[in-house]
Image (cartoon, rainbow, N blue to C red; front, side, top):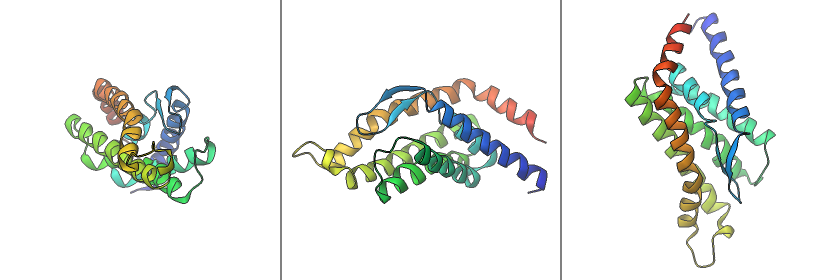
Amino acid sequence: MEQKQRTRMLVEAGLSIAIAYVLHFVVLFQMPQGGSVNAANLVPLIIFAIRWGGKWGVITCMAYGIIDFLLGFKFSLHFLSILLDYILGYGAIGVAGFFGNSRGRAILGVTAGCALRWVCSVVSGAVVFASYAPAGQNPWIYSMIYNASYMVPELVINMAVIVLFYNRIMKGIRSTRG
């Protein structure tokens, strides 16, 4: 990758992280033990991953997760929670870049990235937050339901924005290739 492209990619990564972080303040619904439904805050990260590919998408999304952890409200300081909910969980969103940039592949990529993020949060919930499960309920089942209750609406919102604006997004990406 030539220096001009590398510089452009780093600038776009920084902008994607910044825009995603600002959008995460638009909270539509906050869960009691962590997690929220936000106003399409993953879209900038998804667009970056589609534009620059999965490798750089995962790295950028992991950087976003670290920033979100460092600057955000902490529901846990447990090492596994930091790793699974923030670093690997958000890093999973970058997987969307491995699927390619056709509309159908982007939809699959977004679905895969969000599903992997959910898996990371389910493991974190079952291991770190098991004490929040109601008495007699399996912590794994509780974690699956709890995390799906905010991640499914978040997937729907982010997917809707990607699907509705996909052609414009891709046109913009093509016009900025340089």
